[in-house]
Image 1 (cartoon, rainbow, N blue to C red):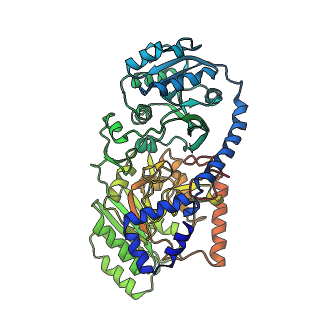
Image 2: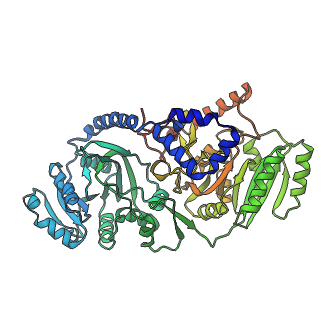
Image 3: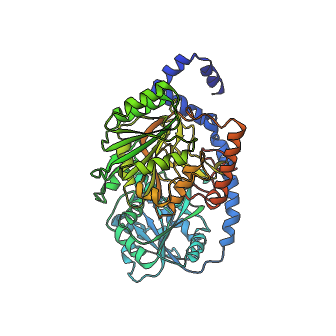
Length: 574
């Protein structure tokens, strides 16, 4: 693969451009590079497994601290598949696990009856019953797994430890998972973020390994699971808890406590339709385990798109005309903020565009300060929603604004960011992770456009702590509530990081909208931080972020502590 990469690099630019336009060839080349471990620095499968073996050792040390501390019995629920061998595997594996009161089985009655009569479990030391036999006053917590899953021997102790820390409130706890190969070796770990409601809605990412604590939640689960017989029922229950505004706490344990034998890939599009909610429309995603949700399609607020610029006629022309020509959402205005332009052609073009009914030209005759420019423009915005848009943005998908607006008007959503690509169709932005490089960085940076990402996180709309202001929507009321961007301490860099985190403090969740796809010709107009003054300013702004938001840098809820902060590729920490 190194040789192929070298040969391709020798091709003339024109040939490489034409090759990139051949989607099948581009995808084949990208996937081959990924498998080789050369693309965006992602480790080879062998290297990744070595990293995970090391990670397992570190986890084992931590998990041993919980051993012997739990003394409360729990009930186990196994969601049967109908595959007798697989169902038995999960049941029999529990014979070595302590602190189990009763094992309850969920599935077709015939499967349950068959299992109850099976000689292999007739002398099982733990009582096995149908889930319908759970009494309403049952005070035991439930640990729920799927057919074929094997529990880590320290799983119950770990769950109980976290449950005790949360005072046994109405809570749901979930863990990371991995898979068992044919030899019983653990591999292919799935390291999840903390509770991410929108990732659950768009992809059902939590599929097994739930510890349900509290009588109301236990009853809620039993009632739900008895009426929904789907492969994705467990994922669906969590989605329903969010959609019904159920009062509960969701806690993530960063340990791989469930080992899966089977790759489940339910049709999430069909699953979500069972819930019958009318707050969003559902379309199939690029994977059957991912959907596109169109929220609030009949809500059409005025959007004020703010575009700061100094000169850069060509960029601005591409940006504005792509918005005007390629955007299906119609209720918006464009505020073009002229920051000391001195190019006659640019000034003439801005004056001409100012005659368009959707465009207003505002002058900001002061030194460049990205935060101050946008705060100035926000005071002149007529819309209920403010859109921060760089002058080097170019629209790709016509429904970009429709999807972003539908999300931003939700009461519990703050900032909404887009999927931004470099002109060569590599990812520039798909959410921001705190901690990268000691500050913040872009998740999946340089991945190819059509890559699904880690746990489908490139193609699934979901929550991040931070999204970039290169293309960001936020309710004007939220913008003003936090005082806008920080123009005193963050004139150029990290102002969007600080802004998004302050919006989180309002009780909102920020969102990466995978359906909104645009090109970003990054830093073309402003230039790079390649002078002493710029580097010094950057270091000052980085220091400010590191001091103010140290908690998020230490642990970003949208990330997992087992993953690396050295690269933006979701590899396992070394």
